Image 1 (cartoon, rainbow, N blue to C red):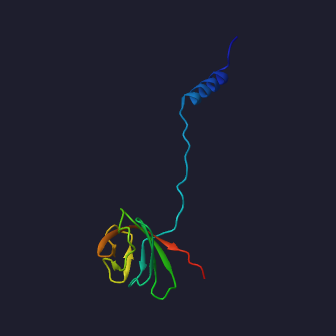
Image 2: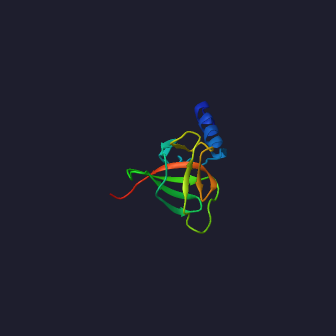
Length: 118
């Protein structure tokens, strides 16, 4: 039995495809991360865990979920939270800006808009 050139080529492609390792590619989850927010002061907050705190705008018009790059705070709820940004009135997820939680400097890795109930 003689195989045509086209059949030989097709068989080589099929054989080669069987040798190639396939890996699933997943798209990263899309989150709306904010680079910076205008946050002159923090007068209301809610601690979710040692990595996350929700801070509210002074006029209560918006809230932001702030994620720290390492655990921050103690087991006790903080009685003071302060903005420690490089620019006055701005808080950025740049790795330099921080929140002072009971005077402990907590570097910020991510800022997300936090949905509040009306």
